[in-house]
Image (cartoon, rainbow, N blue to C red):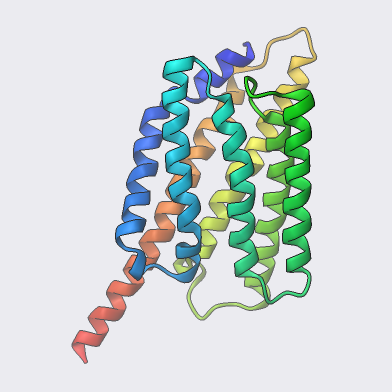
Length: 231
C-alpha cells in the first residue's frame, strides 16, 4: 500500500471525526465555567485543533493536499500542549527549563525539517515523530505528579487522567505508525494495511477521552450543586 493510499484509509471518516471534535469543543466553550482548571487550560488547544482540522479538510478538497495545514498545526500544538503541561507542573523547579528547552528544540527541528527535508507540500512526519516523544515525556511527568501528590477524587473522576491517557495513546500510536511506515518506505514491499488502524482508532480514542474529561467535570459540578440545594 502506498503512502497516499495509507493516509487515505486513515482519514476515510475525516468529516465524522471533525464533527465529533467540534461538538466536544462547543460543549467545552459553553460550559467553561463548570470545567476544572485542567480542562480550561486544555480548551484553547481544543479550539485551535477544531479550526485546524476544518482547514485541513477544506485544503484537501480545494488543493488535494493539506500538508501545509499540518505543518502549522504541529508547531502550534507544541506550544499549546507544552504550555498546558507547564502550567500544570510549574511548581516543579525543572519544569520551566523543560518547557523552554523543549519548545525551542521542537521549533528548531520543525524549521530544519521544513527547510531541508519535508516542505509545505509534504506531511511533516519527521517533526511528528519528535513531537510525539516530547509529548509522551510530558504526559509521563504528569502521571508521576499524580502519583506523588494524589488527589482526593477517584482517578476516573479526574479530567487530567482522561486527557493524559488520551494524549498518551494517540501520540504513542502516531510514533509507531510513522516510524514503521518510514521503514517500509525504504523496503521493496508495500506498507501493510493494518498500519492505518494505528492512526484512525487512536484518534477516536483521544476524542472520546477528551469527551470523558469534560463529562467528569460536568458531573462533579452537577453533584455539588445538587448537594448544595439539598442542604
